[in-house]
Length: 77
Length: 169
Image (cartoon, rainbow over the protein chains, first blue to last red):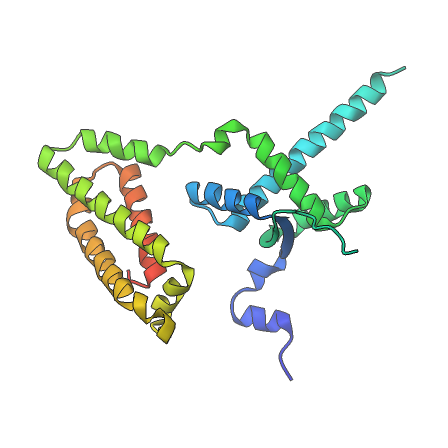
């Protein structure tokens, strides 16, 4: 019987790394992948790192837009 | 009739290593929009790209500029040495890109199949070239280029090549 995953992770010293993170798979067009790879390479980052940065930026933009919408809705009497 | 392709020119799956908190946010957003997580993440990436603006499409390369600035301060002979080294580095990068990912992996593992025997000599030659570049970097470039940004840029490019080919540091 194999050891529990956490135990194996801890033994390999990876527990901390995997504790608060997950692998997220995203289906994107091939062109976009190539573009992201080029941009990531220009910034000396991995594709994953760069994509996460963009997701964060996208979320910020989304939240800002939502806040704007709410503010406008409040203005309407 | 089969379902039409989501991306007519073809789609691929990329894996990203994300903090759990961010994953939860994306998941929540997907739930509120009635879409799946991948779709929402794709939209966010597109938005992120838009938000980063036109400057990101043509990313400036300050380390390259730093190299030119660093070269200006050098004596002609030193400058020539650095330029020759950079040319060697660029040639090696181009050759490696031409060889493709499979050959690189096999070079790292030190085993080649019959099909790849054609490229074996090229890989061995490239390995030696990068090894020579490493020596030149240690003996000449490190002493000549005093600007830390330029030196770092050259070092990183060399290190990437060494990693790809399995040249020991």
